[in-house]
Structures are given as structure tokens and as C-alpha cells.
Length: 126
Image 1 (tube, one colour):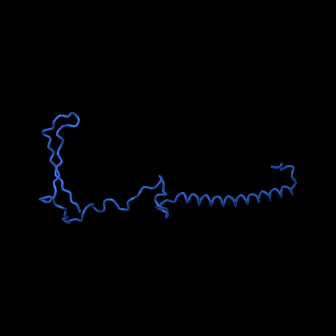
Image 2: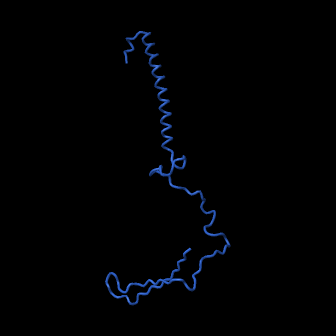
Image 3: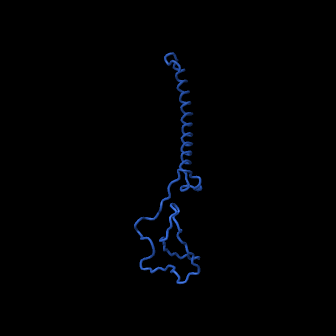
């Protein structure tokens, strides 16, 4: 920066014009860079919910899915008054497969004479 006390009025005017021109160039650069920053920040804010990007591109910061269903408006299950129907057990199954408990304990190897487990299940192959 030159010493302003030693400059003539014409030199001061030339210095002011040069500073104004440089300020104009710098302001134009600031506008271009501000627009570029806004564009890049907008790209960072894109995810699979607000753009056409696939969900796999969301990375670890993906937003949690939100249900659009309002709680408490409808009860779960079937319609009120509907009887419903389920498969019933058949009297004579096609195949019976017994699963007996072990004859001795796996840990202490003592006999298990009274070990009786009774449970019945029926599998339906559709």
C-alpha cells in the first residue's frame, strides 16, 4: 500500500479507480463461488427419498423409513364380526414322526426313565 500523503491527487484518483475495478472483479468471483457452494450443498442433501438415486447410494447416513399410517385409527386384525377360518387338525394324519427324549442326561449321563415330553404338532404342506 503506497503512502497516501506522498501521492498527488491524480495518483490518488488512479489508485481509487484501480481499487474499484479490483473490487468489481472480486465481487463477481464471490457471486460465482457462492452459487457453486449452494449447488454442491444441494448435491450433498440428495438421497434416495428426494431424488432418483437408488437406496444403495445413501450410505450409512440414510434416513430411517417412516410409516404413513396414523396410530390408533384402525384396529389390527380382521374385520369386526368376521368369523374367519383356519386349518383344523385331521383325525388320521398321513405320517407320524415320534421324537423321543434321550435315555440319559447328556451332562451327567444318568438315566432319564421318567422323561416324558408330550407335544403334538401338525404340518400342512400346501
